[in-house]
Length: 171
Image (tube, rainbow, N blue to C red; front, side):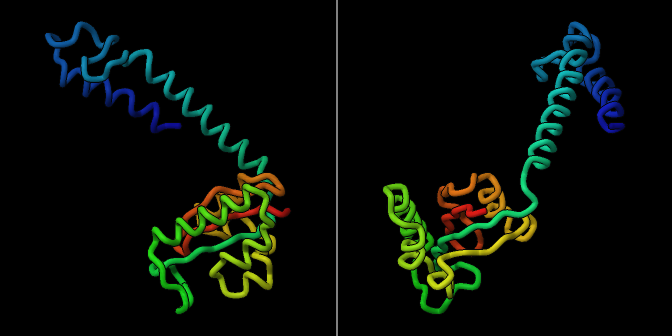
């Protein structure tokens, strides 16, 4: 990557202009404010970043292209696309979603909790089922949570502009 290599001379010039020759013992130890060796730390950071990027790419490759999920959506006054019947604060909505999740964790049936807690129009009839979707089809926080689940697993409470979700991966 040219940027990484091109930046090294910049740091050498910057360190030389800031440190001069009297305030730093050598360029290899770097100026005091870096707390690291200029000569040794840059290649290590590049290797670490490359390893992180490779792992992220491998993770994306392991993810399925599409999954299926159900969800409970608890909305509040500022939720996008909320029905006129919803009148609760964000804090009240979060508390309601946490209550639903607590009941699910204690063994309550997910479909029954959809009927009781979800504010999404038609959710009770569909049992919260969203069908199959690609990661790019959903808002970021929802997609990240849904695609990180194993089949049958239920997420923690996830906030999106639409409110608070509890997601159950089905496929």
